Every structure is written in structure tokens, then in C-alpha cells.
Image 1 (cartoon, rainbow, N blue to C red):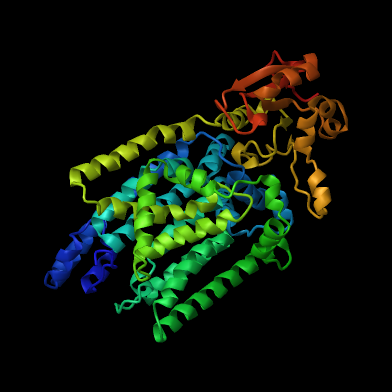
Image 2: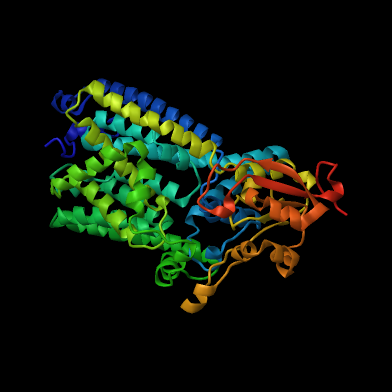
Length: 570
């Protein structure tokens, strides 16, 4: 069957080089190469693949350093802010970190980066201005490395399963994806989870999962399970992916092979989760298991619904279309045709079933976000590439369809990465570039509307910034939760009363007052001649949250308005 996992002694030897070598059929029929020929081919393959990888890395670094828009707060507040706080003792720690809902594993990646940079800066005596730029850019570059690994692994998975031509198509889909350009280099746990899942899938022993009698794949199994366990630590819900793939692997095997699969999964999972428990204990100062706490707060107590509820069909009507954009029709066709076969030993059936299962389970949860199903994208790209390559169309037609779909993604990628919600990034850049002209700054915006300490790039700069809070109703009864109003909602309920009353007195009137354009007239009426507009930047043409409509505007206190529109120390 054309859908079977590619196998054979020479195919196994060169599996990692699927994308650039001779086709599989030629490899398995050729005579065993001499040592010199074998070495030459490996050197050639290494050169080719190194070149491709470095090109992909350059592509993703460019991607990372040029994205100018804001997506969601977790990009900063569940990764860079905790990491910044770990290293420099400042930063905004959200309620999840105070209640042990998050594992320190993901922020620790960036904390290690910040710690290393801080040491290098001290040794080399790098200037503060250069430090700022490096601290801001370095996490993006690191995430670009992870994104590159995800692109590469997606192509390798497709190549290993269905041949090098499918691998190349999968690579084109991954690098030509609007969603990937928009999200792959952002510092979400979901972005790293997706890249690690792709790498784990690329080394997953598909022959074993299909129950085939094949070469020894225990090393690949261990590496895949190690990566899968780390992905589950980053996002506990990743277990949904591996529980389904693991069920296929166990169900399609018996005897010693099945025992090996179960034993390897058990000891690797237990070891990695044990090490993570030690890391979390060191961070929190007590024994805690964030996945259980996370489920307790967000599922049992339904606190995730505090941040919004979505229709059951969200992932079908919005999630998958956003992930796949122009690829959606062929992706849906690929899932359908793969499921229709009912061949449990087929990799395409296993992948399609996993995608369907994970999407269905997520659809049962009230609070939904497209990035929750982001780890499915490598599988979707691989399956889509296989379906496109296996159509009855001519090669010329297939290429036209492929590049037409990629072309349709370009304007979407541009608008998402460079236009929509760029003002909240620009205003933080402006604060960083003018840090010597202000002492305090206040944000009259829905909570977490902008990046925070890590975006300013220099320890000590953010200590006098404040923003409206949105703590969830922790420890309250269901009736109390229904009537609970957080600080941000209290402000928007009556901005005038908030700013003239005790809440504003608690924060104090800052040197810089930052808000969205829809509040401009209201704020101007309240502050009178105490403040003057000193910075305005475009944010978005539209927004589903009416509070975030309009430009991002900064008001400066008038005492020194003529002198760089700022207030010096009194």
C-alpha cells in the first residue's frame, strides 16, 4: 500500500535525509554502497540538509524580528514576565503564578537565556542601550530556532511516512502558512509545544505503531516519548495527542513489543514529570503539581469561563479556518479520506483520528482559543501534503494549486503580523526609547493589553508602571462569581467615577497615561488641562472587544509638556 510506512535497511539508515536524497524505491533496490560511497553520500546529504536548515533558520529569524503586532497576553505574561521576574526580581506575575497553576518549565527556558545574557553583559561591559536591544530581541531569536525545528520536523515526518515529494510539499505548507508566520515565533507555550510535538512525531516509530515487523526502533521511541513528555509538561492537554497515538501503538502490537511500548512510556514519563516536580518545588517553595491545580481551577471551578465562553462549534467554524486558511478545503478532504479507510494500522488514519479526537475533546470546554489546537498543525500540514500529492491531478496542476494557496496566505500573514494590533507594541517601544523622560506610567486599558517589563529591556525600568487588574473570582461561591466585577470592568463601567474616586487615588496620577482611542473624549474631559496628548499610534481597523477600538493614545502631564512632553522629578 502506498500509505504504509516506508521501511527497509537502507531506508532506515537514510530516513533523516528523506528530503534531499534519491527516492525510496531506488534506495531499497540498489546494491549496498561501498564505505567510500556511503561516506560521500552522507557528507553530501549533510551539506544539503545543513543548507536547508540554515535557510529555514534565517527565514524564521527574519519572521521573529519583524513581527510587529500583539496577539494574546500569554505571549508575555505566561513566559517572558515570569522569566524576567526569576532573573531580575521584577515583572508582572499574574494570579496563575501565585496559585501554582503553571509549571516553571516554559519560563525557565527564557530565564536561562536572560541569566546567560546578564552574565555576558557584565563580563563584556555592554552598554545599557545595547543591552535593551539584546534583551528584547534574544527571546524572539530563540523562539525562531524552535519554529525552525518545527518546520523541519513537519517535513521530515511527511517524508518518512510518504516519501520525499510529500515532505517537500509539507515544508512548503509549513513555511507558507499565514498562521505559522503570525504565531510560530511568538513566545507562547503553545508555540514551543507545537514545535516539540512536530519533532516528536518526526521520530515516532510509525512502523511499530502500525504493528509492522520492522527494524529495531527503541531509540526513536525513547526520543519521541521524551519530547512528548516535555510537551505535556508545557501544556498538560498535549496528553490528548499522545494518548490517542499511544493507544494505536499498543493496540496494534502484542507480546514483548506491547510491553516495551508501555514500559518505555511509563518510566520516561515518570522520570521527566518527577524532575519537573522538583523544579516546580524549587520555584514555589512547596510541593505542587500544576496540571492538577490547572484542571481544578479551570475545569472543576470553571474559572476559564471567566475569560469568555465560545460556541461548541468554535474550532470547526473559526479554529481550523484560522489555522489552515487557504489550505482548509484540502485538509478537510485529507481528514475525510483518511478516516474513511478505517485502517487502524495506517499512519494517515491514526493522524486523522488524533486530529478529530483532540478537536472534539477541546470543543467540550467552554473557553476556547485557536492556539489550543495549534499542536495539531504539523499533522494537518503533513496529511494535507500527502493528500495533495496523491491526487489524480497532473504535477503542473498540483504545483499551481500549492503555490496559489501559499499566495493567498501572504496578505493574511502581512495584515496579522504587521497591521492588526500593532499600536500596543509601538507604545511600549516608545516608552523604552524615551525612558529617561518619564518616571511613572499608567495604562487605562483592559488588563494585559500590552507587553510589560520584558519589552522594556532593562531591569528597573518598569517598577513604577501600573495597569488595571482582572483577577478572577477565586474562592467565591457560584452566586458571588456571577456578580463579581474586576478592576478593569469597574473602570469601564464608569470611567469618570473611577478616575475621580478612590481607585485612581490608589494608583496615583502618572507621568504617562495610556489608553485606547475610544476613551479619548472621556479621558480628556476628566483630566482637563492636567494632561496633553503627546503620542498617538495606529492600533487596528477593527476589534471584537469594543474597549480596544481606536488608536493607542498617550497623554503626558502638562508641567513639562513643552520639554519633551514629560514630567521630571519634582
